Image (cartoon, rainbow, N blue to C red; front, side):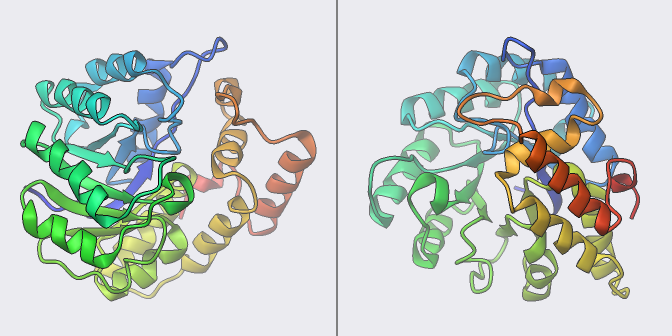
Amino acid sequence: MSKIKGIYAATLSILNEDLSLNVQKTVLHAENIINQGCHGVAFFGSTGQAQLIPVSEKINLLNSISTNKNKDKFIIGTGLNSLVETINLMKVATSLNFKKFLIMPPAYYKYGDNEAISFYTKIVEKVPDAEIVLYNFEKLSGYKFSINCVEELAKKFPKQIIGVKDSSYNLFENLKIDNFSVLPGSESKLLKGLKLGCHGIITATCNVTATLSRKVYDDFVQNKEQSVNEKLCNVRNIFEEYNLISAIHTFMSQEDRYYNHILPPLRILNDKESKKLLEDLKKINFNYENSKVA
């Protein structure tokens, strides 16, 4: 087991005009943001439209990246409510020698900690070689992990439950478990989290802030003065005024029209929204070109 630490993007899924997954462009995008500073990426998180993309297309991508030079930097999300489908997809991934997974608990139905523990227990029993990052995002799943729940899972399965992505922000300040990665889901929590003992971030906006985020991380590790954290937080705050997936795809469409393709009910920002997004980013000297420079 290896601890996950550093800057991770919940990478985008790039679609064709017919809204099928463009595997080549999706992989190229992931490689680009790793080159810009990310320590790794998580495929098929919320930002990757995981809940909307067919399992067959996810498997196509897994096959494509199974020999990628960055394979050890990839975390695989599932984005599935079904326990059986989650396990089946993880088995496909482990057969291709992927080890690390980002698993959100099921959405829609109401339940508590005991039921969440049961869900992950069944996954571990069926896929014991997997290393799982819990995904705490009440806004989308309807369930919020408690500290006690995470502690119990990590104690029960120390080799399989290796971390948590905290996008509900109720864990990262106080959760302390040995050999366990705590990763807030926002750049605005990066520096604070590092000071509290967290290990990095997994975020949507690292698709566009990889270079800035990496500098904040590296400067902290090297005990240097922070020079870009305020700008990084401002960028995140501007994107948060919109649906993050919509805003990031709109921003990236300046490079490639394929970023305009997005699965309903998600949508690209309209002209008025897009203009305001780009103008607000310009005010803080952030645009597509200089997003790659810290």
